[in-house]
Image (cartoon, rainbow, N blue to C red; front, side):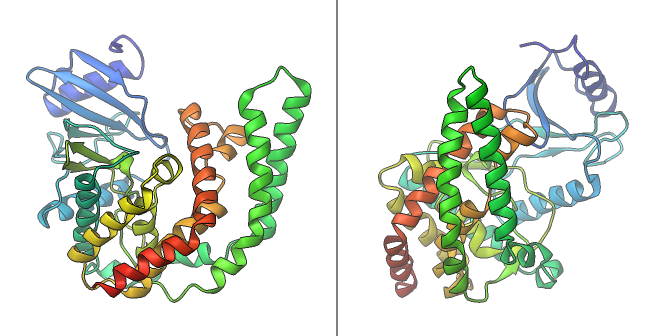
Length: 350
């Protein structure tokens, strides 16, 4: 759809002309992204991707994330090219609508049924990114994010689950019936029961490595052209966190685990590729990545919490993602012995 007659599209289109020398004939809002509003701008001879940051965004942090993308590119990672404005700024904040502008990358994201080539590319590229970022001074610094993650508030988590169940059940009772309310009430009740597994899973975790990461490395931020990984996008501001988290998140991605029969094979291929390009990763970080991924799923209410408390930009997508995340948590709980054996084999073959 053409949006040049709407606001903020008119302002962004004018900004692209004044600040970047780009004259968009079309500016189409894309149904992707929960933290920013994203557009595809069709200009003379090229298309560009425009990321509009909401008011209150830490633009200095976002600029630092852009620098991480550039660093990754220098170390051989394919990324989308950044277009700076006439002043050389990575982010243009001259209007109410702060934006960054990027080359449009052809290809597609693949969230289920990754081919062996795609899984290998995803793993080797993440290994290359981690190896490059491990040398950053901030990687040796403290990780408040990791400390908060380890100190999960189980009482607060259970209370939030109960609150969401009450809201869903009240809506069901009031009618008319919404299919998601029924699904939410069921899955939240199951999640309430699974909270009891968290202390056991946390107890056996070894000391895990923290460093600067991509920050949001998942299939939705990987653009493939066939088996070739053509771009890694949407690096997040530098904030040290667990290496095992980022490996486990992409290797055991909820969409893949919940919907793909050979998810263990995909995980093996991805992690083996990762280890080859980041050989200094510790055995404990690899051994723990499935457990950390499972714990992240069990301790997060992402999607369903937004549905009932603060809807996201594309809440239908978040609703679906909650159901996939919940299903993936159940699968990983049931297959802990399988993931432990898989990771043991990978470590033994190093």
